[in-house]
Amino acid sequence: MKFSTRVREQIKNRSKGQCEVCGMRLMIYEAQIHHRRPRGMGGSKSAATGSVSNGLHVHMKCHERIESNRINAMDNGYLMYQTQEPSEVPARLWYGWHLLNEDGTVTAIQRESGGGEASLPAGVQVVKDVETSVHSEKVQWVSDTIPM
Image (cartoon, rainbow, N blue to C red):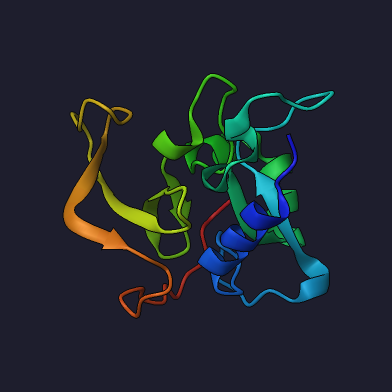
């Protein structure tokens, strides 16, 4: 399933014009929306495949790195299995680990070495009382890009 125009706009608004993987400013000609849970050959009928939580606004270079280094991309939440729900799989954005919400916001999470909340993958815990919208000023710049 392709992203609808409305979903594409929500993903772009969430990114505030920056690659969600490395944080670099996106130019229109190099910006792409990446499916975290791939559509597969022939597409997908699942509504979650075309959801806001399944998309990342990235530039071509990061998109190429995601596709060429799939194991690392899965470890960072940039790719996932067809059986996983995008809203439940955290992604390592340039400003930290977050769950991507369907309303175009993100929820900061804290990764742990063991345990975690029952509804999240092992080792992941929601940071209490911290729901971050990329539209707020709470987001801090991270000087280093995400290693791939």
